[in-house]
Image 1 (tube, helix red, strand yellow):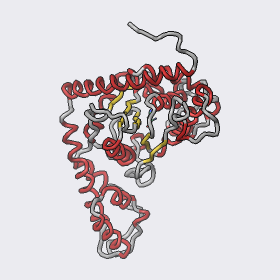
Image 2 (cartoon, rainbow, N blue to C red):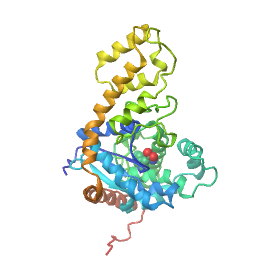
Image 3 (tube, protein in one colour):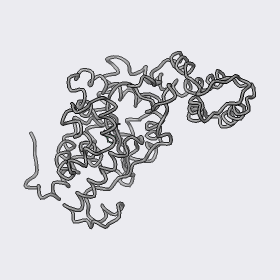
Image 4 (cartoon, helix red, strand yellow):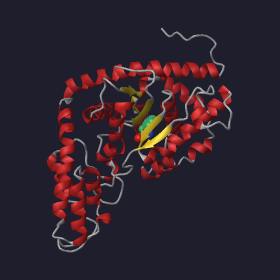
Length: 358
Ligand code: TRP
């Protein structure tokens, strides 16, 4: 693993909830692949967060943890260059979470719109665990433990990142004497322990599901998974409603056709895309099946190498390989996070003695 001091750091992560789908790919993974080229990347498996709503299913969470890392590696996350981090083995995150919880008003956390959306989407009512809203505070610690410059995320995470930025500013102001009027990008230069990191929302923040209406998501049963076979991809896309009912020689509106939304995202051939749109608008002998066939090809072309790398990680042997990747990444992550924690404690007047654990 190579690191240079000047390479800016980024951190992002996923809660392991099952296999990744195309929405994850275009909303976030693609962005991460690009960032590997230019940044020192930390990719966190937020397995602790999985317990906030599934505490009674530890075996599933364990499986999902390995599966998500397999998906990442299959997509091209390169453990030689990037750090794969297991949240539950980075104790500094849990410690920072406590300190940060004291810097956020309770009602500020409870008004976090992403939490509210999740509570209603998951039908949690008022039955969620204490740990559920706590995860948003924990996420501030996930991020700040690594003092990253930015956080590549989907747009649904922006509210969490905003909270993280507030925590960083408040910590630096209270414990490091950073002036409350200082610019966000000046915090570290002025003695703050934490940078005020920025959210970087991917090119396609939101990919519509195969229902053509809602965001692609596992729970809505409208997802195309990275591990779907070519046949499954074909079946799912062919079953999509093109947003309107028309004949091949009738003009159509690509804007309201979710298959065209996929064409925009997945067709690499700009000329072909342009041509399809033009013919669709005119009703120039272009059936919906034809558009779908192009999209199916493009999606399968994207997924082929992913499927191949994923197949090499199946089974117990794959579990072993992936566990080793996680172990190495987490070891390096702990070196960074422990240093952050030591600096934070120093700033808080908590450096009574150096901690040495047996
Ligand atoms: N909450 C994020 C999600 O559900 C996952 C996550 C946990 C995360 N910790 C993070 C994302 C830190 C970015 C940074 O997708």
